[in-house]
Image 1 (cartoon, rainbow over the protein chains, first blue to last red):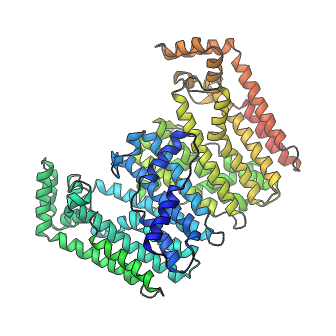
Image 2 (image 1 turned 90 degrees about the horizontal axis):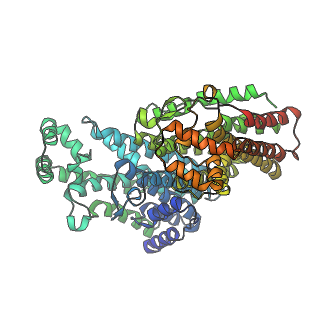
Image 3 (image 1 turned 180 degrees about the vertical axis):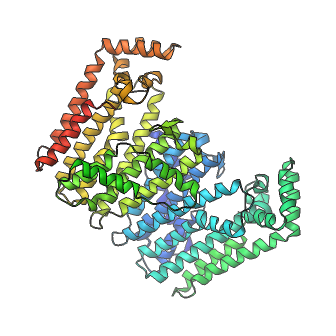
Length: 319
Length: 319
């Protein structure tokens, strides 16, 4: 298997090499702006890594990898419109730099761009890759809809929350992994094992995101700590706390408190319920399930190390 | 070839038979609402008609037809958000009935739905159908971007306007026709002839839309006459008038006039330039080019009549 550095470099090169028509600039400049803004590039790296782990040349996986990455950035672009977000990755969002209509239309074009990359996967596997990609995309929209629905509810269960983040975040990471197996023409049980790895890794990642927003180191995390509490965002922490201390939590959230005071009061409940450790334990469990998804798959040591390390990093990453 | 009535009925049945998951309702109800609201269903009928004209069973074209129709309705849904439109086909738009975020997210899901239908075209032609569909989609976004760009410009040429409506409206009608030929596995020159037919028909349709907005019969047209003039929308009529009577037109548009007074003053310029007849002549020319696109293609009389009649109706349709 290729080294993680080479995989990471190849993804960066491929994204940087995407070329756009010059006109109409109002359509293509926001797309270039969105894609060049970086991020971890986790998904395309996973696609290439799975393909390489299965002994195939990563060139056959590059279009699938780009398709998933462009799709992911499309969802962020439209999510930012829906959330009226001002900043993304340290820069103004597209609707601030341009306007809402640009963000909507350029996002639409990114979805079609992503689909076009999937259409360029090797002919023998393209129909399967396309089917997986489209099914995953619908699940991501369903997850986003549930996330929006949850904003106005106080009766969301932890089970419903886990299903929401599975749809909104995890299935795309599963899809990224599975696409690497599909282009490598791996048997179905191998493809499914990598899909399960990705989904569990995605759940661990999202829970760690929730955890970091409350318990992260502000110097390392790069965002203000406590944003989720201030916005009463339905995270695993808040949903668990509401389900176990409903009246107390809803009273705090209903009060007109200064932001820091609200953070302090909500965190006091979290602390009493030991949610910092309980959330961490859950992250460990999903990272562990990710690793175990691959235990019956024959892999070289370097490949297994890659996937195990990634799962372990999801447990204690700080940004 | 099947009769126009049968083709129209089969499209209506197929659209009515689309089923949606029950949950999340906030995602799927706006999609059902959008697709059930009707419209002429011109595009899917064309896909089936071309396939039938080429002697094939229309069942092989149904997924392509649905893909194009769902895509068309997706563009209307997102266009309505971008235009902040209140009404569509006599009913409140999705962002009025639900909200902007629903319209954005449900539109995204409709684009993926449309792509999924294209992915279900017969395996032998699916890659070609998908490539055509994705390329067309990008052109439609480019057209929408140019349309938005034109709002703030007074120097748009007639040539630029024609290219904008070719992209925004006509290529999808060309694509609908060509997909019928692609699924019928017609040779490339036949597919291209039907594409050209659709593009020219689309240009005639759009110019007739512009014409009707100013010269239509208010009792038949179903919309207020003069809306484009009130909104200073860059149509063929306005762009031609600005290019020929620039100062006069821009003075009228800059004045703070009552709507009916603005309509009267702009129409007076149109009348002096004989734009009513000149626009009509141009529509006749595109309808004629549509018919001539098919002149070297071998077709049964009933099939040729179908496409000729459709082109002729585009000249004098009143709604």
